[in-house]
Length: 107
Image (cartoon, rainbow, N blue to C red; front, side, top):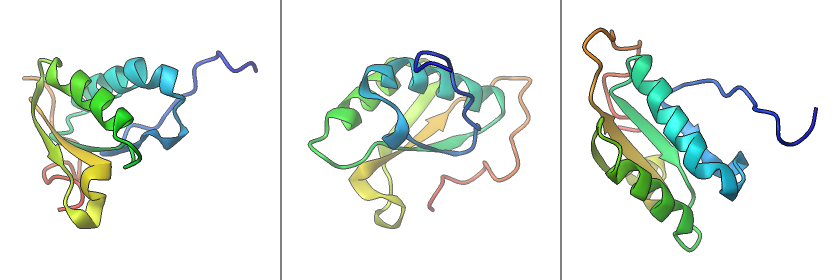
């Protein structure tokens, strides 16, 4: 296995970007959002870390231009604060909400 092969990531309501190389953040976040929506998640939490805010800005730029993202905001302090973003997804008409996805993660 070389470093360029895709790795399957479980789709849950929390996605931690710490293990994603910065060059891969954009396509990985886009695919994660699409898959989370297809699975019926209404809210997801993306953990990007605090650092200098570069990952946060990258994630939020993606969210701002993703048509099925209806809202995003800092997570509450107990769920990562400004080191994580809570995202609200518009549901696909045929999607049934996944179990446990009716409340924002960490709230």
